[in-house]
Image (cartoon, rainbow, N blue to C red):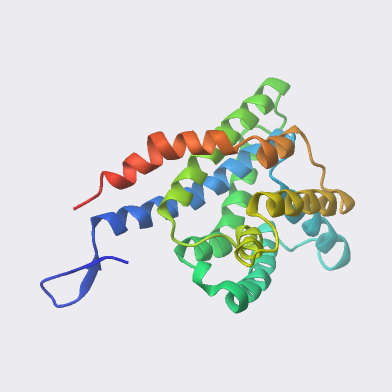
Length: 223
């Protein structure tokens, strides 16, 4: 981490680090907005969110219907954070913490706002939600990945297994995505075309945003 001295004798992050922090915050929060759009499209969302909504269905049926998605998301990710801290704490960073404590509530708020704005969206609006949500997800992911200030607890699962030489990241990620979709489906959270696209087809678009948008944004902050 690069730091530059200030006149007060304290240390402040340099311009590049400030840009990384802003990109991390914006990237994770925009990811929440993108998930809200894909969720409200009713064409399926990413595998992890599919799993989370399945768990929420179970929690509502078995414990209390008053537990919100944001609270449930926090609880699940805090459990995963314990594993992450024990087995791969070097992956923990600002992005990890924002993901745990804010992302679930951003998703919940975006879904509620869109439902209030358009209570019964037409098929054309739903397709628009899906396309916009997927493009925003790719853009937000590129900001978050290029900034490189910590990974989500879910991303860590595949990264940690790859680091130990058990399975390659891509193979492990396909397995964990499929397990998330299966688990969510068993708990009555329906996958869809959006789930397939996010699991298998988004990599090249994220790379495009990374090369042409996120990386130039970061490199322009050199001082």
